[in-house]
Image 1 (spheres, helix red, strand yellow):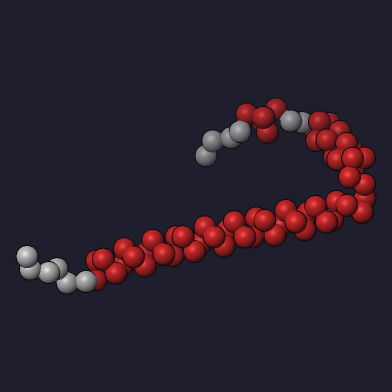
Image 2: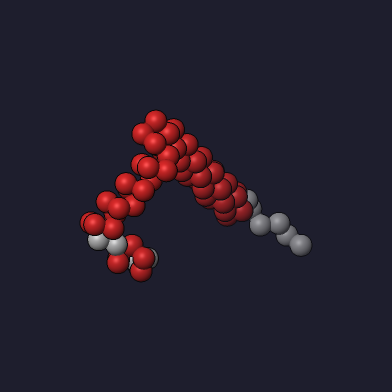
Length: 71
């Protein structure tokens, strides 16, 4: 698995600084709303991804299960 170079260079101090900046920008009350929205977005993305995967598998199964027609 490949790592994103940016994430490999972030240390504990940098992450703490980023978290403090986010807290200052959005405030303590907005962060739960932001995380809830982010969670919904990730969930919807995963649902859409699973639906596409299921449709591809169903169409592949349909194609392989149909008898070949004589031409």
